[in-house]
Length: 100
Image 1 (cartoon, helix red, strand yellow):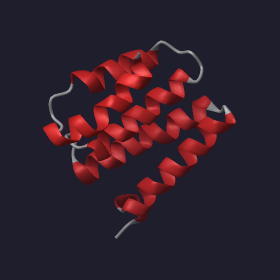
Image 2 (cartoon, one colour; image 1 turned 180 degrees about the vertical axis):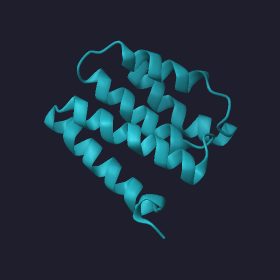
Image 3 (cartoon, one colour; image 1 turned 120 degrees about the vertical axis):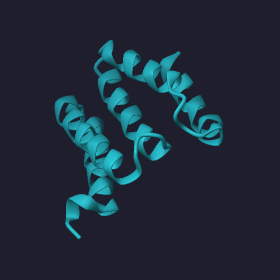
């Protein structure tokens, strides 16, 4: 299969997105996480933490620059009801910590 349709590609986007976020290059990390969101939605759909995790990373990229967009992103994740209850219990505390 094509690289863009594989988990390896999504892992690449995650790794480099985190790398650029840590370097303080928010525009590049936002670009990579936005691409990862699209790729993960195609791979897993939009109702799993695999998908929402990249939205969380996108929010943290904005948060690093004190951009108010981060809080809108975190709120959207908290307001979702598409993840399973188990995924919400496990993962939403991470979002609460970032949001508050």
